[in-house]
Length: 112
Length: 115
Image (cartoon, rainbow over all chains, first blue to last red; front, side, top):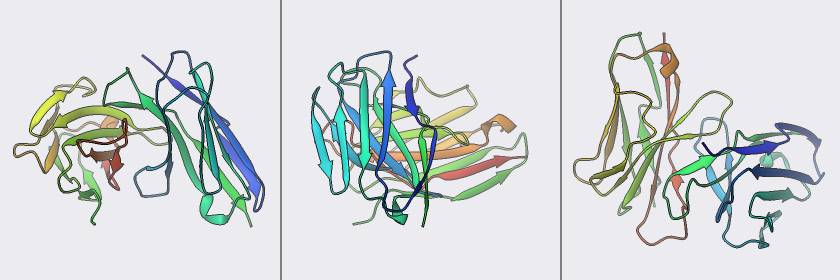
């Protein structure tokens, strides 16, 4: 089935650094979603992307929908301790479908 | 308003026991989803309801898994004769009828441990 591959799998950074992570697929996606999951909680939607080439920001977060529609990037600027968590990319398995497929996640750890 | 709630938050079962996991979606949300999240992995789709109709159950791993949403609101995921490989976090998500594509709101999950 379709798979989303996220890299890196984990990141260890200093507070204040910028972060960049990406998500790739062998298949075309028409929607890209970025979620964050804190320990013991469910994923929370951060950014949604709907058009190839789209660049969207949400505070210190910026995400881009790759022009090939097979990848997406998430950047976090000036990281703070509350950015710690696991970041997932996700998208609908087939166009118009309700169910989502998720990547395996990027775990972000911040050293104060 | 209140988000998606799930109960219990933690469940320990002996192998072979039946378990029932409950999801209360956001009031008025039409769509309801169940996902299974193994340790260190992303969520994987199990099943989807629109109101009381189960429109997709392609992700249920075996016939031991059963989900229902009889009145189009609360949903229950039942696992019969639990096995150790069923140990995971079970996430419920809901979304309203008119929403940008695929924006789903997740509950905190139920962590199931099968001994």
